[in-house]
Amino acid sequence: MKIILATSNMGKVREIADIFKDEEVVPYGDLVSPFEIEENGADFASNALIKAREVYRKLPEKEGVLVLSDDSGISVPLLGGEPGIYSARYAGYGASDKDNLFKLAGELEKRGVKETPAFYTAAIALISPYGDYVVHGWMHGKVLNEPRGEGGFGYDPLFIPEGYDKTLGELEPEIKREISHRSKALELARPIVAMLRSLYE
Ligand code: ITT
Image (cartoon, rainbow, N blue to C red; front, side):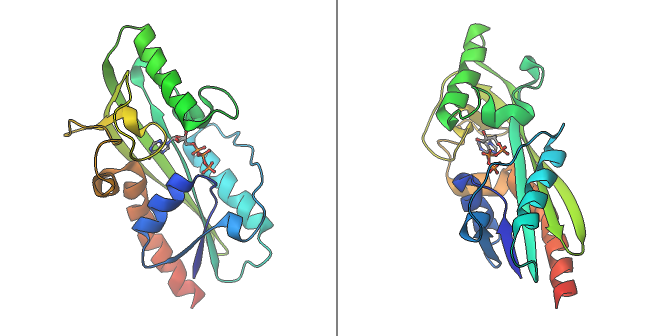
């Protein structure tokens, strides 16, 4: 069974392929030309379903495939939950990871805050001929007003997970793999993937 990833974010592709090592994982861009998907859902789960369904609809061959998407983001209670589902476009449409990171750091700086609690959420959607599924994972910690380290992607250089004193930009990727929102959601996706594999056989 082929797992097709409905994402254009290479950071996510790396992390998902790393966790699903024993599966055949293919970014959708290898099968169809990448296209814009309007993520107009009200929450992470809705946006994950929108992305996976759009990709599933466009696939020329649906036999034996499973489409997996990830909608994720970082939420800061001090900022009323921002950027949340708008994490990818916090600094505006077309913003880079760096633009978004500095926008968040700047919002803390403006308030004279050096660090404040924050959490990542990931919704993973699975679309198959045997139904649609969504699971979630979270990682709690705090965000800083200054980046540290170059590892990970997105907001990682600003984020210190609970129980650590380094950012995800400084910590080894293995640590993120053990504790991340995405890993936790993918662990919940694993039995669904196994169930679907048995239905396909
Ligand atoms: P796709 O929609 O193509 O999957 P995207 O990057 O636009 O890619 P999202 O809409 O889910 O994905 O936006 C996620 C945002 O949250 C984006 O700005 C990421 O950088 C950030 N984010 C999500 N998970 C993250 C993680 O593990 N580490 C750092 N930043 C993360």
